[in-house]
Image (cartoon, rainbow, N blue to C red; front, top):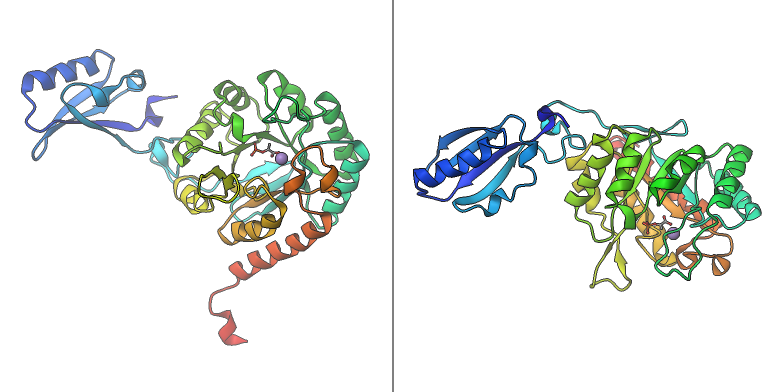
Length: 355
Ligand code: PEP
Ligand code: MN
């Protein structure tokens, strides 16, 4: 990362700090190559740090004797934020998923079973989903399961099935990659590489995905703050991959009736901070199928650039996440609802008065 993408640092000193102590702090910063200016403020002084201060990133400056607090000027997310540390206006990012635009007004529905189970079923589901006008198929060949005794995915065989269903239907494919060693083979079939919630902070995986050129769907860790989510995206972006889609998929809450609560407030919050497209996964954000449709509709009303929905034709037979899968006919109804909500939101204000 270049120094011009670094946010500026302001070290606020404790009120009335003696000059000797202030100079000791200054000298320590300068020893790491920073350019430091002392500013005399009202009540307390502060140090403005400029130049390449990346070497300071690992120092616990906020806990140094005489330091009241450390402020970051500009953004902590120089690549993900609007302008950020670069100080430039940035347009919303549009990510190309197998030739389909996602973001900045281009809405996509990503749908399919949780896992690739068998070829006939996947093809059948893909065709039903495609029949609704949906062009992106999701299905995992590598499944991150809580229990090592649960179905782990068909792995390589699953990738081969995905490749055949892709060529049969022409749909774009989103599928998860869990391990740095699999990035290449998963990227051969995937149009959008999914990073699961559990891997949002797998920094080796993020760095590897940042170096390759397929778009990445980064799912929010289920206990991650918005800051941690955006910093995870920075790993991809700062490594050179600018095709990143964020996905809100629900966070753990002790207050919910299930284990997870979909954080729809994340949508306006992320919109405020980042130019990256944001999609919502109401399936994992629900955990049970009867919540999925209302949450998907709410996500679109709240401004999602897309939704990721789990669909299965025999949920009671599903090898993973059957309890939250919706049926193909429910999915078809949902697609109609989502387009109606988008149309309603895009209608010019005051239209009703003229009809
Ligand atoms: C999935 O999409 O099937 C999945 C495992 O999601 P998450 O990582 O959000 O739990
Ligand atoms: Mn799932």
